[in-house]
Length: 154
Length: 169
Image 1 (cartoon, rainbow over the protein chains, first blue to last red):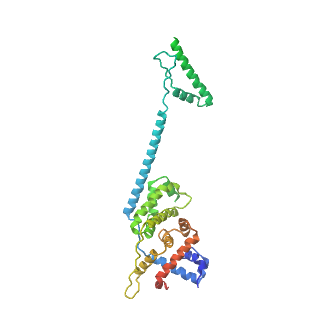
Image 2: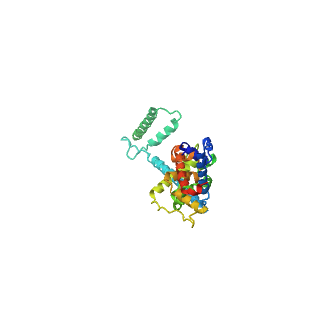
Image 3: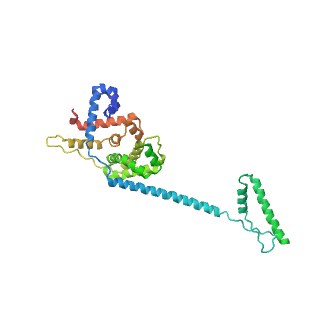
């Protein structure tokens, strides 16, 4: 004879987690008592805990891992800074414009990149459409050419 | 516990030391019973290193215990898969009259626990060594509560049979 329906309830009862049926059933109560005896006997096993040395070893390993993680983050940040610096230096000034009308040896040094940056800074608040910036750059380029032509004709 | 989780997520070294104090022995005992005492120390260290690495992904609305023991359980599973199973040991020696002393009964029980099918042994140790509730055990193993209880019931039946005469109470 068994009471399979309440097997789970008997386990719960053996661990102090309640069941009304179990308390009123002889078969269930008997099995619960036996499970409690198993638990009681198992609890007499020798304690097996981490030694102080083992705990210190684990703490040291955790600290090492933390340091490595911080180092990796620092290296990634440095790599990003280098990448940004390289990208910035790649925006070199445009080669000096040599107008065909300029006298020999006269070099008009036009830093279109710097002009673009300055226009961007000045115009940023108003944020004009790109068309206005392009028109401004074209205007600068025409003035440079006129200056070159003027130098030749003076 | 919320302060502990916050400290762990912030990478506070003292929080990890507290975590080790709270869970270190329980994890060690669970791992030692499941994977063997030789590998227990290394596996326990690996559990806490993984906790340290993954704490960012831990959902603070959950409980730390089941999460940590899930990591421990998975490591033990991997370790047992790689390891060659040790030879089965015989039962404890009996006294002249065939009766066992209390210590020998305990050894007989420990042997019987070691011989449990893996699924039952896992549930047994999560409860007895890990101190998890059955609901938490079900969460760690990814099974329904009824399944966890069924496995424990099966384990207890085998252990009761192994103790036989001693349980004629």
